[in-house]
Amino acid sequence: MGAMTGYRRGLWAETLSAWYLRAKGYRILTMRYKARVGEIDIVARRGGVLVFAEVKWRGTQDAAGQGIHAANQARVRQAAELYLQNHPRYTGLDVRFDALLWAPGRWPLHIMNAF
Image 1 (tube, rainbow, N blue to C red):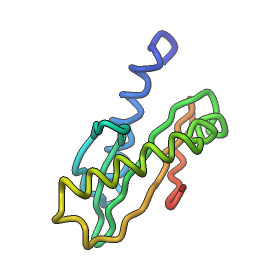
Image 2 (image 1 turned 60 degrees about the vertical axis):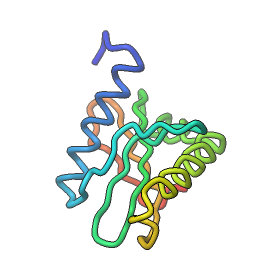
Image 3 (image 1 turned 90 degrees about the vertical axis):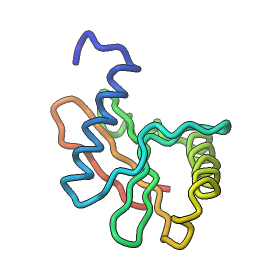
């Protein structure tokens, strides 16, 4: 991953995260959902749970976790509200905000109910 830009590394981490979630039984509904208030990296569903997932790649998983700060969480929550308004068929599902943290040479850390 050395020569990759941060943006490309982020896209790569999102793609890997989608495959990781699929392997865990999730169905990917949307990737890189853009709303006027923010972006959601992955929207997925497993059973009666709708997951809004934030993906971060940093030098360490701790650093990746620090990238999901309060302002970032607020933007994801606001974008999730708009997603649900635009996709009313999902409004009856339980909603969860997860994080997938990536670092070189490590398996992803999937934190359910991260915020």
